[in-house]
Length: 347
Image (cartoon, rainbow, N blue to C red; front, side, top):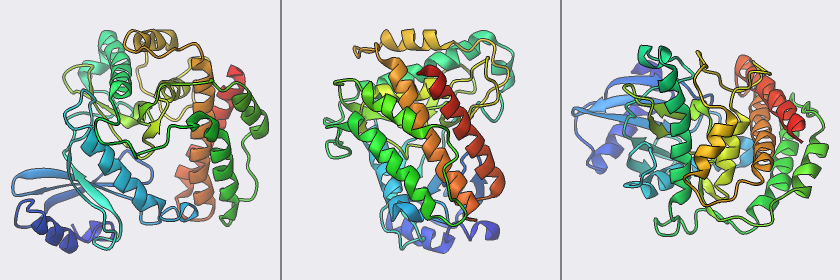
């Protein structure tokens, strides 16, 4: 517990939980969960109930102002809104908007009974191609279900601005990329032909779309699967969620889906891979569950590559400035470069 005190003030957390009437007594068996590269997850128990606490990194993203705390508040808001829906997600227990309690906004959620496939597959999933096939399709089931949620009916009418959502993407993320130059040690962007890719995305932007909720960062590392089947247990890490075009979630999944012709360039990988559906089957499976047109799906994949690469490059820039460890920064920069190569191939 003492080693984790730097991450969370457990005395302050205990007092806050008392005020929320969330059990009594000491917090026990605290441990940090792995899997993310920035936000902090802690699992602990109190009064025979298990909790997972999620908070921003100790070094908040200074180039985005107070965005780290704002992000936590938004995550809690969307998890609360999804309660009772068909979307597999972690159940929200309680949220604290006040950053003064432990030094950051945070929330408590139910532990997910599942596993992250990028960490390793259980024997059932490792030994069955059909189970792995179900895993791939079940991610599509999850994002399709999310796209069907009526965001206004669940109280997310002010969660994002769908008007002009697609048109805003390129200038928004070019501005983000430029902001990294304010970090000491990161001078020039190394991503290839950024302007060329930006021009193509803007020139081929779909004319309209049906607004809905999007997860915003849907890839294999951000989903958890059931231990006993190939079903999706939860979509996790909701920090990029907003109201916009849900087809970007499908594009994001495809942008990060392993490519046998270009191994090693993606953010995530799962072994063994045989049995997982290919891109065409993922698109077909989504089409069976959605009325949204998929004619421009390649455009959404390219946009996803562009956007995610710039996000990952931000971690590299923070690592160059000493705010993130070098190994993580280098790994994510390698992934960002791979995403840009994939985008250029697709245009």
